[in-house]
Image (tube, rainbow, N blue to C red; front, side):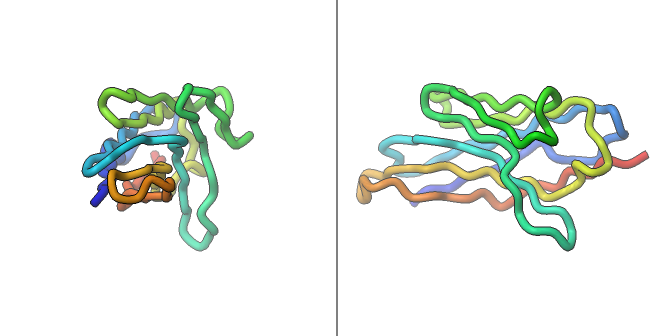
Length: 121
């Protein structure tokens, strides 16, 4: 079994910062790409940022220059540093990781439960 547990969401004023964390645990053999998605009320889930196992990062245009994704492989953890937050960043943020387990060596996408980020004055 594999679990992804997110933390770090909350309420912040426009222009503020938050750092999200997502730790994977369980019978992990290897973690490949990791990423963050978000879903605002009434909207489809969208990709925010991804990072490969060698730490190559990609971002959706709307967060470039404001968000930074990183990972700590020794801790099976991915982070999302969010600066200069805007009201339109308000959403539930989900982490996703492509993981091969001890039982299933073909990688499968696992998801966290989501953490709420609200940007409001």
